[in-house]
Length: 239
Image (cartoon, rainbow, N blue to C red; front, side):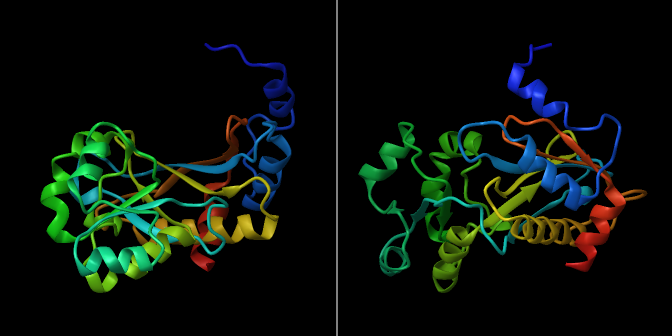
């Protein structure tokens, strides 16, 4: 087991072992236990009562957080012609519509946070999927990042406003950031409830038993704070 530093131990001592906090208490404690010099992200980690091995129990969707993520989101768009011009006018940070840019990405340049593509460019994008895929940057219709030209501007605006994708991993967990430690408590709570509401609505019909098995909140590099799943679900349902 990795050794923990003094600052981490001091932060962890503020968390009562074995206790399940209310979402409001946990979010407050996340701010208190963040010890990094930078403005840490607030992370949500949820274990769901679904089997990721079955296609009919997958959980994946996108949600626009009302207060964003607290950072500038760099958007790259794969488009050409009128769609490329529309992307630039909509504020895209880059447009991959030439061989030089595509080769640059294929060689490992990934100086962007979200990649959006029009359907006609997916054949080209597929050729650099080995670079984009491992970093979670591969455009995908289910993630709202493969859109036709008429929806392109909206997709760019939402990405910059704080749209996040959540998806079940191979271990049955979902991991999502909901903002920064510097956010006011009310803004973190609204982002949290919006995310929980979206996850609850994405519950597969084939899921049986308790849907949210466990939920923890933490700051980047901070200690995990267990949240009462029932209270979290009630907040999400009321969003």
